[in-house]
Length: 283
Length: 157
Image (cartoon, each protein chain N blue to C red):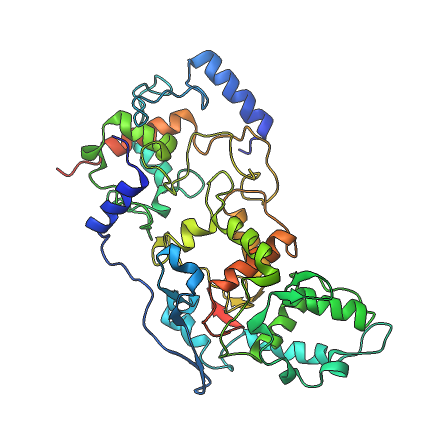
């Protein structure tokens, strides 16, 4: 007997797997004041996925890990935010400028994280936050680029993200970004590597399930950069993409590549409506 | 022991030449779901199969499946529980499922354990670097026979 996909779906409905720990219903409030939307109605473009609620990865972590994100004094990612404040104020490069020279206080970045990646009309391309930071460094400061997924960049992204915590992710999916968004969607559903897995294999079809001790989340990126207990540092979105694709026994793309920029835009759009949460804490 | 790609390929060629092993490209499905013939002609060892299924660097079946007979901690639940698998499937079907579960379950997320080419962006194991097809299969022919032999012992009574 050969089972078609529909048969399998019907079986799944008829015989639900026993209810092992799914995502929880805890509420995330940071420092007792910043309310984070960690569950939201799925954006319209996800209708075909059958997912009606998008959820932050925070819901899939243990209580002790969740607690680390509820107070900035407990969140190890905030150490890197402090470091980035120093970088923000430090003049570098041939123009003798710092970030602060043009942007004043980091609080001027409120709302920025929420809408990236976004279209840059002058450059005629979709830009991630990291690309924009490096554009400033090279073209406004006359300084060297930072490594795309390196520590300096991750820290600066964390500083910029903090200014938008609690604001809803709201990246564009159409207009000039449409083609790149479609490319990202294609990548999301492409099964790669010897294990033949796509992003969707785990994070759409199996979120809430366990792969060994790992509780599969929806793979949302509203909490990036994220401090992982596993490697005790801030992790960028592209570094995480690379790690996931590596784990399918595939040849990865590089951080900063056109493919990962497209994938970031698409995955970010699956979290439209969730709050910006970075730097989050995960295991 | 660390085998280079060439060594593995040479071993496979030698294996199929001398032991009449069924290579990854020669597997024959009956009705698209079952592989009736042993891949090696050597009876599988269920005890070895149990170890392969619980070992991360081998089958790592417990990453996605619960199997009460195995003591491995943190068994996953992406795939169905395998208790009673020996009642539900024939040996040929079990072999077909381990070799390539997508033949039975279209679109399954389960990796094919005896596939060496036809991948999208094949990598060199878990390095993230490009790999050259044909890759070594995830499990050898005899390892698959061992796993099948263990699965066949998973009966409810």
